[in-house]
Length: 407
Image 1 (cartoon, rainbow, N blue to C red):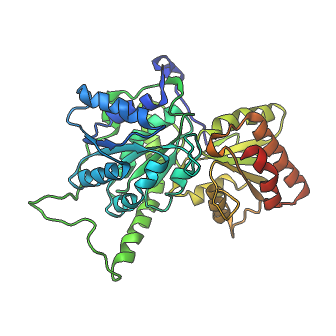
Image 2: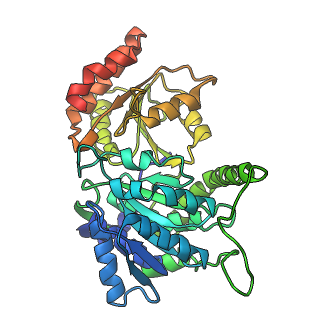
Image 3: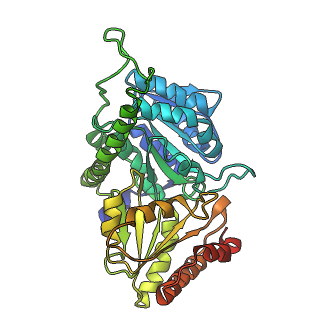
């Protein structure tokens, strides 16, 4: 597995822009028909840029809808998708929570809405800084969830998300998740999506089923006990299809643009790693710097990047971790009442009853935007090595020992 790549010959195309602008520019090249969103920190810059683009005629035929709240934003897109429009929104934190009811509607009616979730901590207390509790809390809503490591990936995933969502065998909404401020507000070199390449990669949206008076259909009608289970199962089947589609689309994107971000998962110094760190989102950048230092000292430490959290790539993870001697999950969310994060829970479930007997431990870091520095990652690695050497895991004491420093 390769890490994120940019073709060296394309580096001359790089421009320094804000992460939010890069995302908005990518949305523009997808040629959406309807954009609806409500401003909320730290995603506001994305929709501000898009509103300018629409007002300036840079997105032909696109309707930008001003709404009074996030629930209205997603509801407007449900209606627009029902009549065959390609749709987009962006939100974060409490705004995503206000959408909660309609998120299930969008997935249940199989509308391929694409939405950027700029990850931010949730209230109370009020906090505008980054962790991933907001999107993780929506993991069972039927939306595909992809987590971006950097601003280039956050932007490039927009077009990939549409191609995944609009596949006739998938037809599910997609969240592209990017860490608030750390990615959304940072200025760094990126390659902005070329319109010609975008058009080659993403064809016009032509749904098979829409609301049309000439061919009446119904979406979201009553599903009594005789059929409701089948509707939920059909979403699960679509998630299974999406596993391969996510991989295929990543390869297709690479063929056209030269940029590859990993499909479901990605590895960094993973092939011979004894100690494997597992994470998603912007934490990976810091983790890679630390792992580079360990590799220079001859220590076999590697990283497994989870790019797709929904669908959760069980088989790919099992294969990637088959030779690990110990696994350490580092994440920015907590399942309250369980003393661990959602990714750690999912990973343990994926490895349960398999031949992989490597011990696994989990650390919760960066809640509410607290800095996660290289020395913190180093300390986690050293603690993990101690567990490997002693063969002893005390998950509660591990949590309690680090919570003051890392939480």
